[in-house]
Length: 176
Image 1 (cartoon, helix red, strand yellow):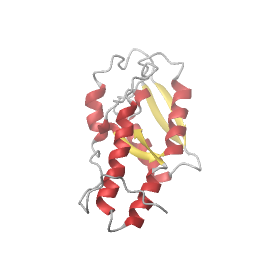
Image 2 (spheres, helix red, strand yellow; image 1 turned 45 degrees about the vertical axis):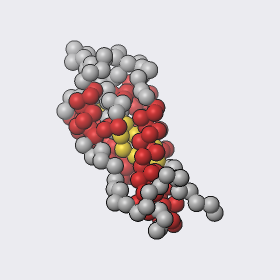
Image 3 (tube, helix red, strand yellow; image 1 turned 90 degrees about the horizontal axis):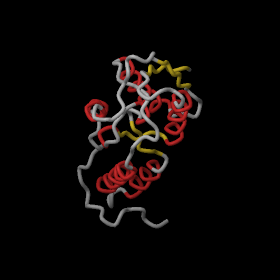
Image 4 (cartoon, one colour; image 1 turned 60 degrees about the horizontal axis):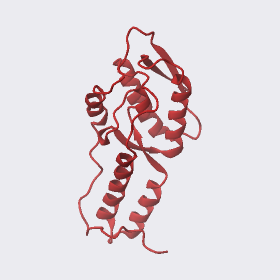
């Protein structure tokens, strides 16, 4: 099997996990500049997100806990559609993570580098604070999430908010 290492990989380095742990906090600041804002004159709508058997449990819980926290803080609202986004932000984020994997493990542990790269292919950069709920399209709002889980959660939310007026306050509830 040919090597999957990127051409520009460095020698063994101390590259660690991308520093996006404070993503939600940073996204809160950036989201304030959006043209649509939460309209507290509209009634708050509770949307339910159903946990499904194919969801990556830990990642689903992390995603929903972040959304629940934002919901409890009164920060979620229906954003105008289509949501403004730059797909280059998510593509570059995933490329940087792949590069960090190879910077750390190539060439001394090719098996690990290739295994992590294969695992990365099943992940998607996810906007922790959903764009459709007022989140910022910024790298500080991204975390990797199991691809199928990401698509399903986003779809569940969208189906429940798509006919609501822009700015409608949203509350999140998780259903097991």
